[in-house]
Amino acid sequence: MDRHDEEAALTEARRCFKEGARGVGEMAWYEGAFGERERKGLEGLAGYMEQTGTVFMMHLNEQVGHVYPGKTKADFGEVARFVQDHPALKIILAHLGGGICFYEFMPEIKKSFSLVYYDLAAAPFLYSPGLYAFAAGFLADKLLFGSDYPLLTLSRYRPALEALEQGVREKLLSGNGRRLFGD
Image (cartoon, rainbow, N blue to C red; front, top):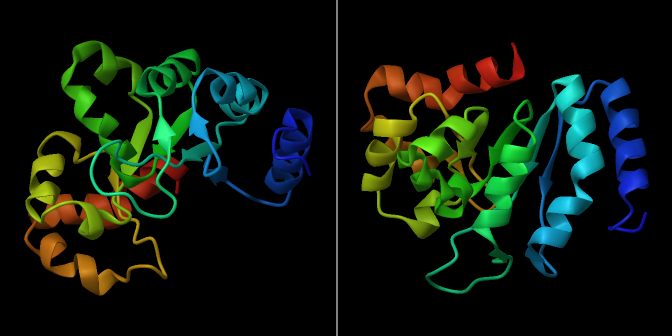
């Protein structure tokens, strides 16, 4: 399948949902960047997923800092527009959305990102342990544990997770995911 074939992607999503899949992702743009073209290329799939109540997961990484394999550029304005154009789409932005989560301190972003969740995959490679408590302070209901296994295992996260209040830790490890997927 051509990686830019919208109709083929939609057909494959329909097939997978019929078989019991609950979402699509992690969509990534490793050979380029996420910009206007990529946002527009997701319109059909995102619209269908809004109608079906399924979950869309997008790879986003931090736009500054050290370079590593798989790090891609993303226009956060286009990411925000994608979210705003699909207000009923449940979205997971991987790797704390590359830091776009911190824009939720802006009231208009917080409002339009009401169905956006963030995973913590690869956080030990990128951030100091203080990140967990800071992010949980304003995103406790939107954080999901993600390890980026086999790159990292739970043991790399355990000390920072154990430092969190038990209720927050339970949300992050299972509660938020159950709510997101309706389990």
